[in-house]
Length: 266
Image 1 (cartoon, rainbow, N blue to C red):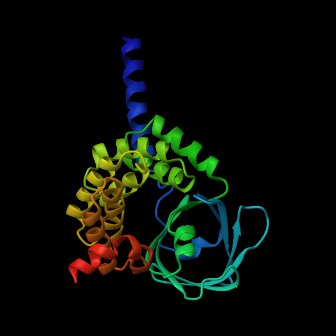
Image 2 (image 1 turned 90 degrees about the vertical axis):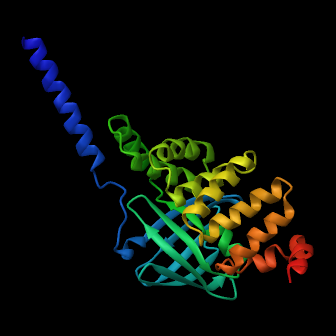
Image 3 (image 1 turned 180 degrees about the vertical axis):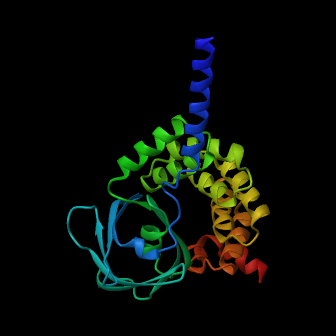
């Protein structure tokens, strides 16, 4: 009898602990965009990059995270939109505008308007704090005792900031099993499939477009996947739709390889 009672107590305690963990606010969105202040890091195709946002409204960018300041920019936040204007260093001539999402452990910049290809590649996507190992460790501990799919999504986005595509994909697979209609997560997973799973990437983008027909990122990534699969006309049609939705730089970036199809469509 005592053994059975002890078992019941343990089961109840574990259930309560899992519930508490799943409702924990760790790594949740922060509506106070002043939280952007401080240091952020990510790994790009060109190597690691660091940004430090100051309370005076400036950003110092360090390519390679070697202690040098390569670009100094001014920034301004209006509601959930951030405006970048380069002032010193490897400057872009025009400002860049991005939608900002910020949590305790990662930040995301989504392109709204920027004609500077270098800044887009450097800025767009996910960033995390320099002490990301602490975040990953805490999330992994919570995942061990929780069935909350949001924890997998958060860990995946930190992995994306660190260039760990396969780790991110594994977590996104689990998350999307329970949340299959999350268009943003589908686009995140599509990005992890490059360059070897183009059919899967195209499938994720197509489903994201069904859910959010005006999501320019889904059209853009779908175009890239179509191009790699050899469907060049379809790819250029996808790029055209992304341009219509605000991905303006594609007019220049894809002009050469889409000139035949774009001229045909005029």
